[in-house]
Length: 354
Image 1: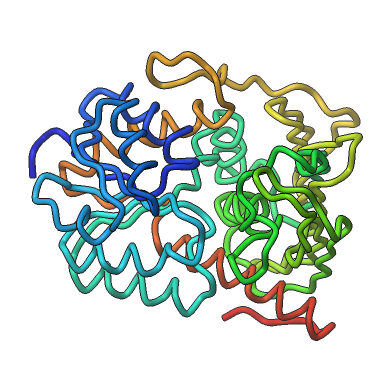
Image 2: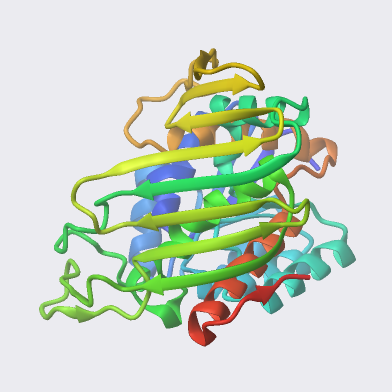
């Protein structure tokens, strides 16, 4: 493979808003093709970003010999088929979260990637946040001692504006929509990153806004996917976690992650980190490196900073044949927790996770 990482993008929503600008600003990366469901949309994005090839069929994109890695930025129902097609063609794959529609699809993607020997990656870019990396360092260093409890609260009003959403699939259960997948997947992955695998879950998934106006559609649309969730988690190390979040509360609160252990406490509020060890009576600030992009970018989107660090690492590693994490195994583990949460919400029962 060329030392330059040549990428094909499938999906022109988040793909055009975040993936393409960041990738084109990253040394050693070249976006060589783009695919969208509509040829006119693909052609428009290709012209806007000076990308050589545009397709309305992702199967044509993944067959291009000049594509080394396919970035899958479609709605969730297409994550599995696009990824499998790309892997079959011998391409490395970067997949957006949530990984797939269910753990069965996720497992098929992981097994196919292993069979074909391609590099497989998930876009859980929040792991690159300096505050998150600092938490990981402290936890691995024993700051908390034995972990007892984790509390996560993320309350936002991001889905309260009914009129500007173009992505109707976000609010449809059959299209992989819902707040658990949109936001919950990121933080389930972070909790696994910090504290290890989850062994069980009990959940409530709620839809507080049952109808909403979607841009370009005249009538209000029925909402079938969750916009609010509450999870009770058990980690394999015996600790318990509580994760509560909503996207439709006008007055926001969080994100806030609090971890309590036998040796100390850590509190992460946004990018501000506080801690106290056994015997200390007050939380004190813990210095965290400044959060800034890895490449030169006009900061137009909050995703640019973490995604730029992830793409820089991918650009440095994939041409050398290095398999990074988070990858499809991480995506599968996250998907298993979400599947368990949905099963628990439907049945009212505790769900164990293998």
